[in-house]
Image (cartoon, rainbow, N blue to C red; front, side, top):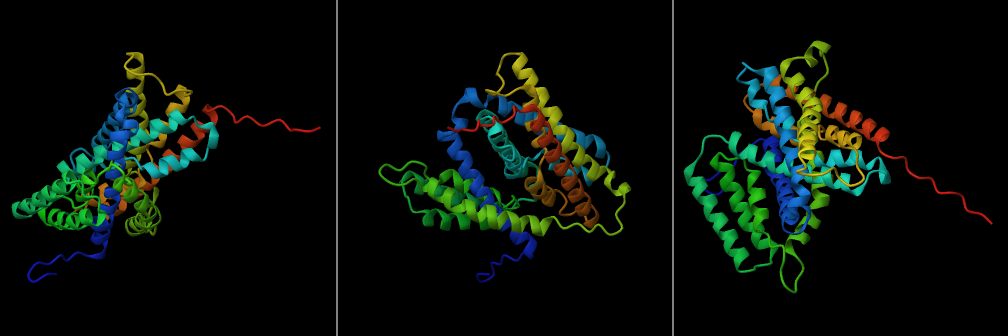
Length: 347
């Protein structure tokens, strides 16, 4: 607190609103780098994964909505199965080693990045509380400050972080979800500075270990706890967990494969190099691993939904993500070419 100005939140919200803002800062940095100098800078390369990402968000949301239609509280969770967890999906893919062509990894990475961008848009438009215009004006002033720093080619990351903290507090108080401040801050971190190390590359490099080994495990620990006491099979087929699990597992397969088939058949795009329909299907299934992002969206959707919904959504996320990871791995295991064994050498 500073005088009469107070930020008072329980520990769980410091994790979800504070630490996850740093996670979204990293996501924003990755998005900016990919758009300016990475794979998202080439429209020809992103056509198929971009279209697939739209299908991978729409189909899961439709499946969830169909199973929960008529329940206004449950319908708040329509976006939960639309999110893909980049780290877990790529982690499962990496288990197959060199059998996975680079183009297929790139397809999954690009799709997941665009999916994250979609999640950011969904959070901004659909999970925003009642707005405080004074806080929004303060946030706008902070954005202008970041713009001035960027245009004057300031390379000090500390300067951006200090203004970013003001932005985060203002957004927190505004009713817009505070994690979006991390994305906005990332857009103003300079990528190219003549004669100097890229501040964006430096910050991205510094944040990766903290996010991967600190923030995401803490977030998962704080948000995933489910008591299995008294649970039965009937609990797993309640509309909320069933809608989430079915959306994650079936929705991504249906949405991504349908869009990819249309794009290829209409000659708007081609399959990734060295990939076949079987391996693409395996990757589409892996996109149903929604763990971290799904948990985050569910924490926003059911903040006011009561403890029953909190348990239900976690059950659905865990069940759907586990099935998608296992089935996706098996599909890829049998559809990818076998690794070539080296012939023994001898005299």
